[in-house]
Image 1 (cartoon, one colour):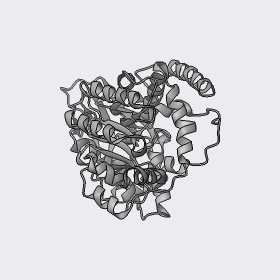
Image 2 (cartoon, rainbow, N blue to C red; image 1 turned 90 degrees about the vertical axis):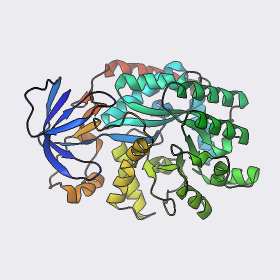
Image 3 (cartoon, rainbow, N blue to C red; image 1 turned 45 degrees about the vertical axis):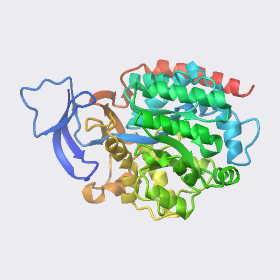
Image 4 (tube, rainbow, N blue to C red; image 1 turned 30 degrees about the horizontal axis):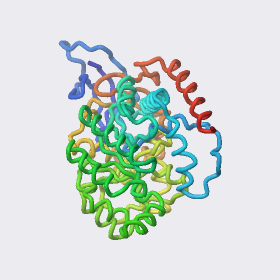
Length: 422
């Protein structure tokens, strides 16, 4: 057990402040206990003095792509993309086709370390590696487990590389969900046939899971759906029951008409907003009008820094939708509601982040959300406890040799870049 003394504990739900000591139990079902001073009869493995620091619930990422972890610094694509489809074609679909076993492992380890250093103890990931599908999710899960990051994974099922690859994606999903918690992933409406959607929904039903899919990230998705199926994207997905699962996650949701917004708001599904990725791909801005309150935040593989993502959502939202600091914080923390409502494991009370927040001004319950959007950043993340286990202390990841992993990821990154140019 870990003992945190002299804490300023902030309840992430109520934002109430409590000056207290905290005893942290290990394990998925571990609890936290508050004390004024350490009980005499309790043995602990580690004591951390948190004087002058903030202790609160660790962060979670609602939509990640580990497969993009080795993209940082890579060369320009063979053709400069002129639209969103070409961004996919010449960058991300070129990259994911080159991934092999070692590259997937390197990507997952790099992502898990980055998450830990950014105070993120739970990740919902949407993976693609068309030429290495079998066991790919298990490779990612093992890497995340090695670092100590909890996860909810899926494979991005798609017809874009042929029906055989789609079938492999379905088989990988079925095998993985037979052993671990996860979701049934699909790329987007414009890359999946009606039959593939039906099979994905059947898998979600079989495993009491849900669908994780990109929705109307670009207007191309809508044009394709109308041209080929005479329905808008959300209408098409809804007709197959995609939105009937409480675990379903709809990524992006930028190009929606009022009827689609109504369908989503009245459904059981969740939305994940990915502001920086949308800006990077020049596809537009998210607007929550008519979508309800089940909106959480992700990074879409851009990085693993949820605090940075939240600030981007707040600042970009100022000119596109009214989004107060409190609204932003609610979206930032909504992912925990998604996890809890669906009885998923790995995000219990014993997931804690310690922030060394050197504010020049007073921080309290009344102004916490202002500090959150204007003051907090990843530099303040000092220590992370995941499922009651200390996985990062004083900015040092504890379960692995980070220097050795970086050697490995850099080697695999170079191989990936060279492969992409062939």
